[in-house]
Amino acid sequence: MTKAAVRSFARNWILDLKERKIRVNAVSPGVIPTPSTECLGVGFVDSQVSAIPLLRVGTPDEIAKAVVFLASDDSSFVNGIELFVDDGMTQI
Image 1 (cartoon, rainbow, N blue to C red):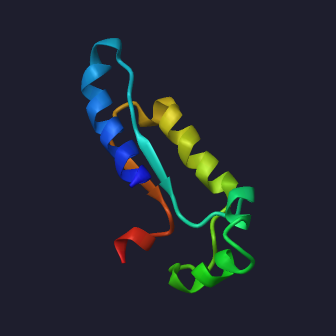
Image 2: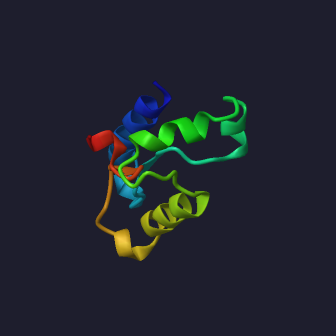
């Protein structure tokens, strides 16, 4: 539900912020081992690997690179999207 709310905010804010020329996009990461995933228990991240097309989890650096792209001029015509950085898990 949280990701759906963020996606909805992004879509609505593009209209609210268009006069100020502010772009709004959402990033939806896949399985990334972080301190917050540790609270899900030993083996949670490992148990997810078989569902990931490349058979590996992502890294925080890979998510950061996607965010840097959206913050850069390279994405100057990208607005109101949800960028899935999850190795295609949401597509299969």
